[in-house]
Length: 589
Image (cartoon, rainbow, N blue to C red; front, side, top):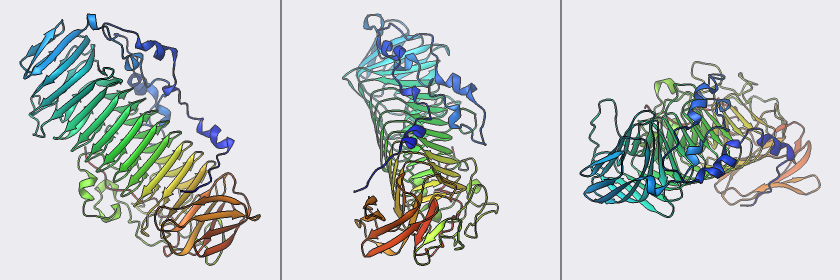
């Protein structure tokens, strides 16, 4: 792929406007590797601050402003040290376990931990289980030091009661936890255990070892409260979700290789303020998902990391999506990024519903989430942005909270818009390859910085960029190629220039598109990976003036006289924005 990348100083400054101190190296973190005989009783966790951080903002249960990035990881979350001589040793052997030390007892292949402390586990066992059933103020550290464990009908590690459980992967060790795929036997009427690792309390993973989780029944790692990762390598295969938490998932570091038939990473709690969010500030991710790559019940905030979604129904989803840094690549059979606060979340997987459908618009929506089909026709009235070329009026784009021009299918009970949802890209590198909408916000779409490239849909019922209430660009670089039937671009309320060009025919994948200025200098170029009939260009190098677009047999001059310029051939759908459209059926938890 050939593309010219220009990021202005203004873009970089705006990308830094969200604090990323949660992933910075502090003195306390550097000191946290000191050896300890047990976990410190003092554990200032981010969940405490999140509970009091904020109530709702603009209707969002967990706006990004409620995520205090300075306080997402406690000292204990980062502490991988332990004093072996003062720890309890648990040895697994075939079908039985033995305990040397205090705080735990063994009964056949089951070990129960009842006291605060550090427990080092090693060995191999069949149909084994580690149960944590300690006081609700206890902090329990479990060190996996070369463990292979299977369980026939329940979780391998089951944390029923504690203040917080820490799982440390010992340096250089390989650890494997698996179920046999049989339905779990439930022994507590208040608890429905459905993960190979299941915790009713806060749960943290750290260390530098490797943990392989094979979930044949449902999910890999499940936490009812806050789930934290600060290190380690995780290889997870699941028939359900890979990693699932109720209140939050926070990832500072680690390598995550997840193959899940449902969502790879998922939060559920969209009912409590300060809950249900996902915060990623580091790590390497390789996600293959039957449903969403990452699904946040409320806010999704990515401030760093190397994230690749190789397969998904929808790549990244949440009420809001904020990206300030990181290297992100998303491949999806529907929307690449989708922001909507209207969807239900969880167990009826859209991957199952999508098996016999080619797009979300062909599927049955949940009653609370019915949106007009993106295939519905829109008028082709002229917008407030400038146009050039033959029949280049693109129809009215949606303004802030209301239609501009005649192209908007606005109003109505179910117009698909969502004032509480937004996507904001302020930095990093984002690549999207989507069969549905490339980037779809049912509310606002903001681009303030970073580099965004979209290989969008080839069918006319979706667009490379899609939004419900408006789209503004103030910095960064955007190249988005796709079909022209629902093609949209940024609005003239933006401060950075953009060009939407519609071709009069579909061009083959591999056809380079070049934009040159009046002096013949190349300003931007891109070679789409799929067939396309429209392209959006925006960068800090664009300004008012004359340009020439060249692609295949097409060479046309474009006069840019407005911050949002449309040119080329009028699409069959008139280019009118239809309120974003819901990016797929929700699921019920």
